[in-house]
Image 1 (cartoon, rainbow, N blue to C red):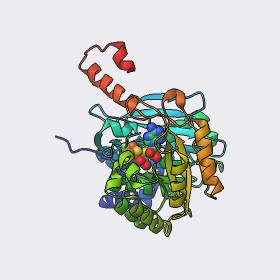
Image 2: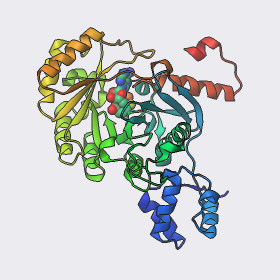
Image 3: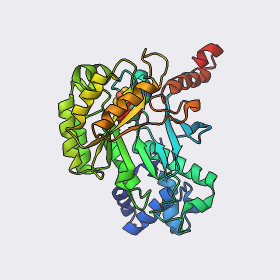
Length: 386
Ligand code: SAH
Ligand code: SF4
């Protein structure tokens, strides 16, 4: 059997330098290669015209540049775009691009499924399939950036006109958030490679402030991230006391709120922003009363933070519902009256099920659909839509 080719999308700068060095290449060759792959989005080694012919032949023999294949791409009326990527064996993951006036945010996945089973999360209900490789994680950014740049015309490639410019404020994707499917800190090594590429000036050149890892609170890994690659941190809090959080975010039984807040305070010593974002999904009658608001104020006083209230996005199954707009207004007013910076997340991409926490419901159906199609079994329409 032929040895598997190395997917260059999964190699950070030191790994690329090492690879090229094995063939006698100087470090600057690795930088050139990195720019071709990530900045220009080129997958065909023949097109990398300033690389020596022999080097290109070596690359073609041993390497490839390959994002996971796109199964579907959907556009919302509000400009949000969602890609469904095939990661093999009936598994699919999703990425969402959210354009705003002053930025373009790409939300990417770190795992196919999730082990943690949060009550209100569609990915959690799907169960765990597997960790994504660094190539699959960065492949989502590689693909989305390339496709969005093509759509918006080459003028958007760089305000300086230099397609290799790594610090372009006019870039289509200005922010990346790891808020798609999966728990990034439970796929730490692969996520770390991807984060380093996002920050690398020869790759995506994003500033640490514009890359956010969202975690349900894996305390020891928060400390490791602080040491290895401190980017902006969002923490899925969702409940202001341990008994409730134990139910909504079961990992709380292992890392309760007090330990999590200590980890947040330690992280702040390294963080690129001087606050942690606490995400708080608004669940009708469950965590949204005035009493909960008062408890949350107590927590927010223990860590420099902003609170992002997320109206619950429903999906079939969990028997939870979204707090009313009036309740969300009152709840956020309590927090703001206490001097806590509070935002309410706008729901984007509703018409294409691209909102937070909805990313797996459809995947499950599609994955099942694909599997069954592969086995050529016909499925009643009702089940496809379910
Ligand atoms: N595992 C990580 C990152 C992925 S989830 C984490 O839990 O932080 C990204 C965000 O979407 C988290 O804050 C998560 O709690 C939130 N979320 C999950 N399901 C949701 C739903 N149904 N409605 C609204 N937000 C949801
Ligand atoms: Fe996993 Fe995050 Fe969903 Fe919880 S909210 S199940 S940690 S993806």
